[in-house]
Amino acid sequence: MFPGRRWNRTAYSKIVVSGALALAGATAFGSVFYVDDDAPLGGNGKGWQTAFRYLQDALWVAQTADEIRVAGGLYKPDRDEAGKVQPGDRAASFAFTAPIRLVGGYAGLADPRNPDRRDLVRFETVLSGDLKGDDQPGFVNYQDNADHIVSMGGYVFGALLEGVTLTAGNARTGEGGGAISRRSTSEGEATIRSCRFLRNRSEAYLGGGAIAWYSKWETVLTIENCYFADNLATVHAGAMWIYRARLTMTDCEFVRNRAALIGGAVWWPERSSWATPAVIGRCRFHDNEAGTGGALVLGDRGQAVINCEFQANRAAANGGAVCVSYGEADLVNNTFIGNAAGEAGGALFVLNDVGFGWDTEVRAVNCMFSGNATGGDGGACAQTTMRERQVLSSYVHCSFAGNTAQGKTGGIISSGKVELTISNSTLWGNRDAGGSGESAQVSKDLTTGLSINYSSVQGWTGQFGGAGNHGKDPRFLDPLGPDGIPGTPDDDLRLDHRSPCIDAADNTAVPPDTYDLDGDGNTVEPLPLDLAEYDRFRDDPYTPDTGKGMPPIVDMGAYEFRPLGDLNCDGAVNNFDIDAFVLALTNPTGYKARYPDCDITNADVNGDHAVNNFDIDPFVRLLTQP
Image 1 (cartoon, rainbow, N blue to C red):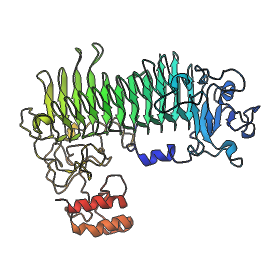
Image 2 (cartoon, helix red, strand yellow):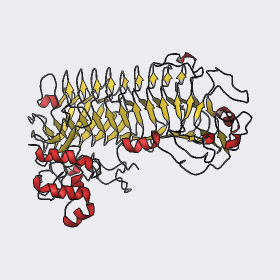
Image 3 (tube, rainbow, N blue to C red):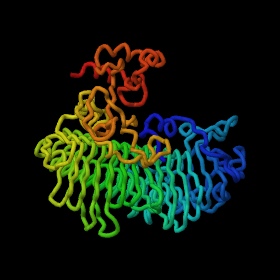
């Protein structure tokens, strides 16, 4: 269901920042209308030479399955030739009243010889709510901007918005959504693809600075390859508020979005159907901020966050990156780096704040927590209850290092009616006000249940019982990274070849591949990949098996050990590997012929799934480190 890599800056920038984009999908089944803000008045929209000047005029005539192609330019919802809207009307919006396709980024009249050429940067199509053209930085003069730039209502199945920039919307009331608003009591399905959402604001209570999506019944919302930056909600959901939608959001980036209370980037309090999982995948959340849930707040069953990066997000209270307030959530193959919370849960805060329905259950698998911090308790993760329902939290194959708490427990802390399970994980180098002993790695109060097995815990005393645990240094490759600072992207929690965590975990604790991360169609097999998306079940012939199960035995932590730098396969990394590394770099075919029993991916020292010049410096560090 969800194969693929984590968020990739290069791949994303090719679509949204720097390159041409062919129209995705098939040609529209209905009519095609053309819009170009350089076109003379009086056009009928049936070709580029007779294009509409104003986008509204195309929307007035478009019907089900029609397509509107929009050339690069600036378009505002209070302008048309038909006279159906008035200049300065804040209530005017580009309304999808039928399932149509609106696609931007065309050359149009700027390239008469090839007007259908698309380049989302060179021919940027901007839909703007700045009706008077007087906006200033810091949302100054937004009081007269459009409430919603785009509105989607009614029974719209198959609507598509692609390749446009939406900016300067300012929702004042209702559910919010400065850029896009949907409020409907009917079903619907829409796709938003390769769009940018910049500097939109919501002053409405429920928020959604850029997008507010509400439906009373089943809706399906797909968001792909989109960029959200500098959006603001004066109450909730800096970029996006989603209510009762089965959301699939992939390859998106959220940067510097803010909300005063909940969800700096996204607040997703309820989805419409629990029959199939709803997924946020391959997304990046950086430098977002809120009162609770600096990047993301979840609150329903069947929600999953997969292959995402959370870095430098902040919460004034709880959950520097993510808050799960109730329901059920899977967090799979995610990295949490340098997030911060004022009170609890520097990266993740889990609670149950409802007194009815179901328990809150969170399952974190193959996740890395590095350099997160809190002014209170739980530098990486905190879980608690506020009502009579309980919280069930599990961490499997997770790595915790360099997380700090000014109060108690830099790693994982639990209090109240919580059942906490930790398996196949490493907790090392986390600190609190008392130091870096066992209680700084994991702690609980008297009402919390804790089961911990086959894990490496600094200062391990054995008081928590369990099987296969130890207090030996996991020997991460470079937990501070070359910059020497925890909580930055170069932190490397992969295992050194001397690690006691290799082949020391429990095969039976590996959860099923529910989201089919390897794309083989098998969702009941044990999860076959680690955080780097290399094989999880991989034996190191030079390390005795001390874990549980039939070989190959899995390792503790988010990353399965690979003999990085051992290019001649002698079990050591030294000067004898230099020639083999150079051969792998310059002549992969020759390397495979000379070393047929070796794995060329051992030369991928920086872990980016490519063997190239970027691996040279990390390889040198392997040779020279003590």
